[in-house]
Length: 474
Image 1 (cartoon, one colour):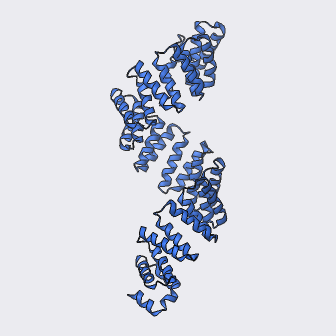
Image 2 (spheres, one colour; image 1 turned 60 degrees about the vertical axis):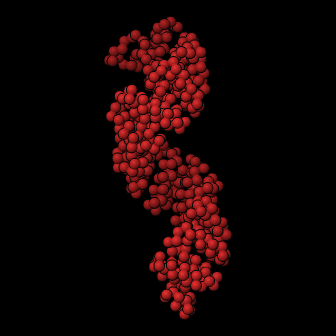
Image 3 (tube, helix red, strand yellow; image 1 turned 45 degrees about the horizontal axis):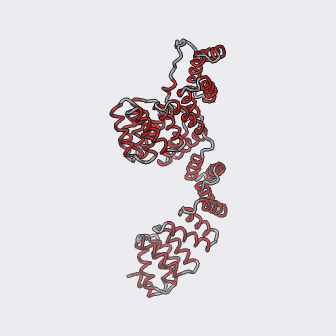
């Protein structure tokens, strides 16, 4: 939804409005009139026309220059001060914009448009509670004003007061069923409330009224993706891109859908398109790296992750991704360096600690490895595989009783995980608890017969002992 009311920039100048006349020539004529007339009424009218032109063209610096002249010519015009505030808002100079609105309101405290526009700037300044008060003041002055109600609904959404926002939007859509802005905001509200089917229906109604709104097609794509309708989601992103070719977010989301489908080549092309428009887009660089990593093109993946880190040194996901590539290339020291850097940034990520533990194991850093596995199970206490690796590593290090506890914990979480029973058998044999060891071994082989080959190698000595062989045959 537009943050500015273009209706406040109406053309009041009674000049030649012939559509054949070149607009630039008209503006030059108004500028000449301004130079000739000094500060008369015609100059004010010319200024208003020039300001409207530059505002519509989004040339806000030029508009500001002329609106500053306008407030000099008409210092007691609340309309002039409001226009200046709107232009400053679009230049992201919110403090100055609010000063203009405050002065305009002091001149005309009964103009609801002033409160609406000040509310919009307060909203842009993340002063949501104050913005809400301004929209409510506008509604006191002008009850039922659609723009005030719509902006109030937007603020209520930001304040997560979704039911109140929905009540307003439902009223508006009944009152103005042909207003595409209302359908758009209602669709967005339903999306925030996780009512995706209703959101999709509203986006469709909006698109019926405004088929060239690329944001609507983009948001529709997001909703369709959440519904698992990936093909139609891609179609929606394509429509958004057709309407607005320079739309990196649409390319990025389209790439994510392709990646979810395992269509990595297509995903890579989409991420590259995103980066053509926004070469410093860290999520796009990271996801491009992920796609290359899945294709086992580790060299290209590392380049992407390195670029992401260059633009965001705190992007721990890219350190993790690059470390995983080094790990796959058996460059464990480089992998460990990246894992450690990632953990410095984000310590509460169990997968990072898991990868770190594996790299430390491969480097023979067994004590560090045990500590890392311990962190994994603390952060993710129901991860039976982590408990297994923790227990197995403790066993390798000679901490038999601690290892047995960890393996028992793994089995409690998932009794069907054969590897934990198998390692438990090894620990029990070392602890000379042979009957329990044999039972664990039999359970492991029953759950996973493929462990038989491993058993024949590792339990060769046990098999040669007659009583153990007899027990295993039972």
